[in-house]
Length: 508
Image (cartoon, rainbow, N blue to C red; front, side):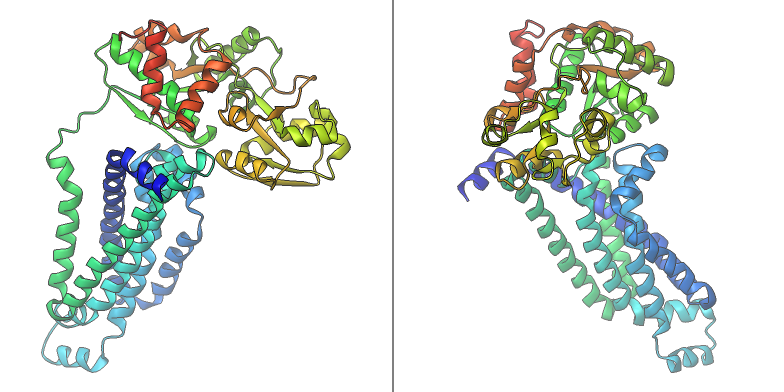
């Protein structure tokens, strides 16, 4: 409990910011869902033959995994709040649409006949009789939709939309840090409960006030969403720098920001924890971000779909640079010194028990061991696919997991072998053994700024500024910086600033 309180005190500012982001995204999605679903539901009551097919379509939308929806939207809308709101709106349609339709259809037929007998046309009958009676049912649908949206909004952090999901993802990345996970999960649950109580109040009022309570609720929601825009000039940043999930990308993009803002008048915005390689690269391609740190080996294997023609870092970088320029019209600036290559790792005890020294040694005990790999590693040639082909290693049991969980699974004995990155901080903390790669399955992975050529043409000074990091940061320095963020609780910005200051790249 003391640890949780300590984490809460250190991250109060971030917590308040993410709660507000979470609330805004949720309310915007709810408002749009109401604007679409309520009129559509009312329309369907007049055209009942097409009602069930259309309601069925909204039901199908709700069955599609949220992560798949977000991934599908990125090429069209980029990253950030726009695709998140579109996805959340789709998830929120069904309860409102179904309750609107059901509420109107269940109005006592005798009341409808009486209204018609009094000379009311269809519209007047709807506004004067049906809507006021059906309003509590419609409001119940809005409540259900709101709770669903608030819960699903946590996943939006994967594409840089912000919200409480950022804290949850950070906790998972830090080796399932339960305090960080709770710091994001508890407020999300409390926010859903609070909003449900508020909407329950509007539902109760609607029994007497009818449609007026519904309008009042919408106005209040719009005001809450619009308030920050009324008091904020909304100046857009000149550059947006993104990063994958993890402490290392967060540290590097803070270095980029500090150097650029120190030497230019450009305003830089950071988007951390944008997800895995495919998400971040898609964001760069379509312009949601302008720069992100990528690895030379990843550029060749993942983006160019090839194999490294050499194991020499300089040659690998040249291959990646030329390939990214030719294939995607992107500039790959000078790489840093550290090599964050993939590694196959196990505990000292297990390595000694089975005399494991190289990846090939796993072949003799593959039926006895459980491997814990990330989804990305399992599906890559410079990963498990290559291990099967190059070293003929085929584990009897392979489980997939998020990067931040695998080290905990290894230390607790749930898995025996994991994939890791050479500069991961838990390599220090858990004193793990890295198996040799004598056949050079894993090419060099040196980090370097990747950006579109159009960005470099617009801001040519970026090349000289960011190339100051070229050849700097050793493996050990990167591991130590990651350790400071992951286990000592330091912020990526402070760690980045300290390094740049020590290197004379930033004034004290």
